[in-house]
Each structure stands twice: as structure tokens, then as C-alpha cells.
Length: 381
Image (cartoon, rainbow, N blue to C red; front, side):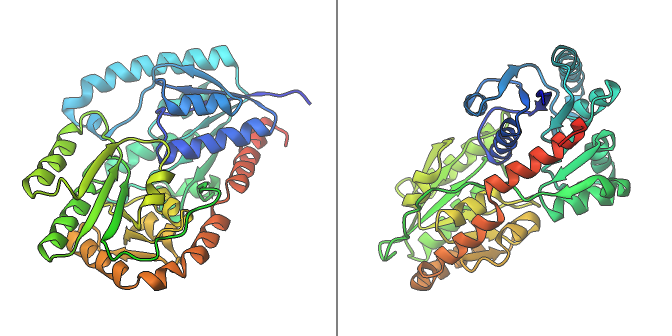
């Protein structure tokens, strides 16, 4: 049986949550024996990881649908990038002649449409769950899914949002929980937090992800005389630099420079989790899933997460996970105090939590299922 070409489209080349999920998809496709060509818009750590996995990489312009482009001020950029991205996508379809196309997110709206025009089967992977968006916005965001032959969805929450927008998509959709690899041998939690709880935030620096809420929680605890330290690991999207600066200004204004450290982006977060006592995932808005929360659980650390959408799914049944009111720094502060009070109890439950998460989010199981779904579009297994 000769291999066929599977063309994979992805909107970035970093190693955040959806990027890591894409990498596992590529690993599964390569292992299935197909030729895998991945297109990304720039060089970065994901590109290097994809090459190491045995796939080919083509760097080409991409039209990535961001919310700012849907405002009148962004229409000029929308036209420019959609034209350049459309031409590049058409050229790649012509040059690689794929037997199937795997599109890793709905933010690449041209790929399902152009692939359909070329009569190439499309598998679309939906990571988004924009429940708070208006009807028109959701209609635009999910419209490309109408051109897909099969749809992979990362959570029941994301599936519900998508199918509430276009009910006909339910028959094509399948929920496949994200692959979330953990460390081979996580270190046990510290025996005592008497010198203060060590808190970790990992993720994009944006109002949605809520790093500022954890900074505010540290300030609240400082006023109460409770010592905690915070490490922030992550960087901004282009255009969100003022948000990061506002965090730095708040830290300086409240004299928390010795308590809070911004480390920037790091592709390997296990060392930070190893030194932390608790991971906080403080998203203000709906999250389609909670990869970062699962990583904390797999690293044998208690997790505090917003009680919302996909984060609720990610922490369901996990004894060392605490859910708090979204958008509330005070709730995070109270939960951090509770972690310190219950430390001995939580230390005794982290292994149970880790085993549950490892079973749910096995990379090998995920890789095999994605490969099966995509290669079924080739007309053979």
C-alpha cells in the first residue's frame, strides 16, 4: 500500500496548548505511514518539533481570522491577509496534491473552502468554544465547518457551542479529548508550604487568560499578611503588549517585585511546575478546554481553575482541583489559603489525580484516533 499525502494547516509555530495538540496529530499521521506536509506561517519551536516527528514543513502566508479583523478598523488587514493566504493555500493544494486536508482550527477559514473547491476531503479540528460571542460572530466563525467532511471537537462544551450555531454539523462531529503528555516521573509536592505557597501561571498574557487576577490575588494576600510567590510563564499575542506592561506596572506599584517574576515564553514548563506548589488557571471567559490545567495535574500539583466551560470538563472528578468564580481575584486568594491549610491532604491525592488525567488524555490513544479519522478520508484504513 503506497502512502498518500496529507496536508496539514496550522496558524502558528509556537508551543502553546493547541500547538502541542497539533504536534500529536502530526505524530499520529506520520506513524500511520502517510506523507505529511504541514504549513505554518512562520518559523518557531513547533516547526522544529514537526520536522523531528518526521513530517515536512512549508512556511507560507496564512489568513488567520482574529476578532480584531472583524471590526471596521481591521478590514484593511483582513483583505490583505486573506488575499495572500488564499493564494498561498491554493498554491500548496496544487503543489502537494493531497488526498486529504487536516485543518487544525476554525481560525483558518479559507482552507476548508478551498479544499472543497479542489474536491479534497477535509477534516476540521475545532478547539474553539465561543459561547459568549454574538450570533453573527459565531455564524462567521463556524461557517467554514460547513465545508468539512469530518469535524473533530476537543470537548463536549465546544461541540455544543458549534452545533447550537449550525445544527447540521452534529452528524459530522466527534469529540476527541486532547492529548496532554505529562512528565515521565513528576516530582512529589514539597512536604511543607510553611515558607509560603509557590504559585504558577502558565499561558498567554491576555485579559481573557487572567494573569492579572493572580497578581491581584497575591496583592490581596500580601495585605492579609500571607506570603505567597508567583511565577508567570507566557508571552503576549502581537498587539497585547500594553496588557503585559500593565501587569508589570501593578507589580511595581504594590511593591511585589520580590514576590512575582515574569519569565516570558518557555516551551518546556515542567521545570516551573516542579518548583511550584500549585498551578492557577484563572480564565475570565469560556475556555473550550483546559490543557494547562491537565498539565498541572499530570505534574502532580494541585490546580485552581475558573469554574467555567472546558476548564470544568478538564478538572471533573479530579480530587486535587479547586474551581473558583471566574474573574474573582478574591476567590483565587481564598483558594490559595485553602491549599496551604489542606496541604497534607492534597499531597496524598496528587497521584490519584495524575492517574485519572493520564488515562483520559493518553497521547497514544489520541494520535491513533486522529490518524484513523483522517486516513478514513483517503478511502482506506
